[in-house]
Image (cartoon, rainbow, N blue to C red):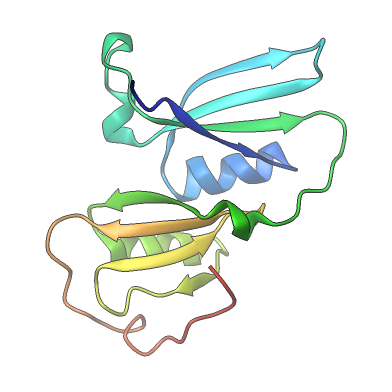
Length: 146
């Protein structure tokens, strides 16, 4: 058995790709359009995983966009996606500069939480040892739920 992917339904594919690809830094691995079913699948991977060969399959995030409008609620009951980052302070700054609310700032230099445009909770974990806690994260309060 091996883990393949996690599927997340998204209401706005462009907004989701801006978040996951442009701000979070995932790479688009492949995309398929299913006209008969009226949906698009976009598979994303973390940059280090995207370099793996097809034989050495890496875990992926599958964004499913249904062409006919739907309302999705309850992203919190999904739990969260988790990604290891090389510099949690820089990752949070990039996301915040892109308009993303840092729900749980990396006050400890080790962990942060943000939400996607569709309400999916994303955990960011510092690779290796925690970074030295610094401002603005050190005194930033939690915002909302994650």
